[in-house]
Image (cartoon, rainbow, N blue to C red; front, side, top):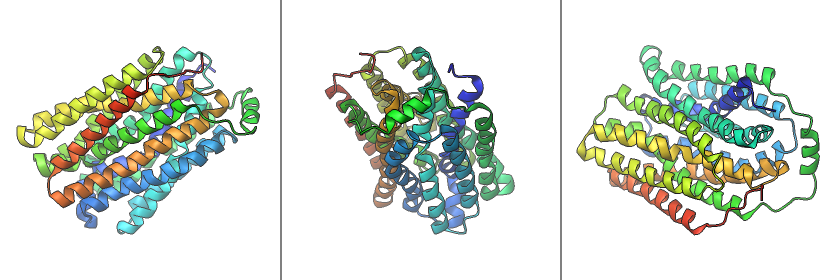
Length: 390
């Protein structure tokens, strides 16, 4: 399979359909927090619960994807995503939102394993990086759309109706999956291989999962609290604060595609990951300084962070496809996604608790900086990467 435009678009929507709920709530956070009377810790817990459930479900999801139809799995993914968005839009209070985001996390657990299996169908290994970069950019497409459209629409119709329209991503994905996702002939043999006795995953997968956890902590804390930080600490208006989500999404979208093209031609991920760590530290440092130095640094820091920290996931996903055989792509991706989603779960609620306790965002940003710094040390310690091609 060469990776048609329709198929790649389906993969991108599959990646964006799950997290669009969290991105939508984040972009409209001033309205949601005010309407439901949420504390910053409660608001951060929504993302935490989403990704905690996704992390705990990813191992099972990866194993299942190696055994059942990719097409059927993607249909369930899109239907589930639409239902959770509508449930959240109807939420009368915090507990109802909790139920919606928990279900959303279970749906998201499927997205990385099933889309990575489809990417492994692509015949030309050199193109897999590009296809994977585009499909991972689906998360940023959803994030950018949420930041650009939903806050402005909420001013006219309220945050609930605005959030409900985000289900259009899932509905479009359903149409595309029916038209473009066909399991190739070789998949049956690969599924049969996956049913043989379990094979131990390479050590590199667990190193990647550890880095994914650390970067995920900082990444999702930044995604969730950046608009609130801009509104409460830097002094941006509500709509401008929501637009920070669009900057992260828009710049991150382009970054993931470009990094996907580049890393697909690099034999080992060590150098790209170190560059991404350095850029993330710079971006977070500028965001931290914006509270005292002015809003201009906030916009620049957000763009720098989006161009680097957001793209780390692409490097991880390209690498995990390289280091395991096709029949184990689902399991390996599930292990990587477990680390990533658990980081997503820990980061926001920890950040929110620190800010609520200290009354100061600076301690939260220092914690995010520390996560990426430790991730950089982890990359330096791991010198040997063993791609499947060897």
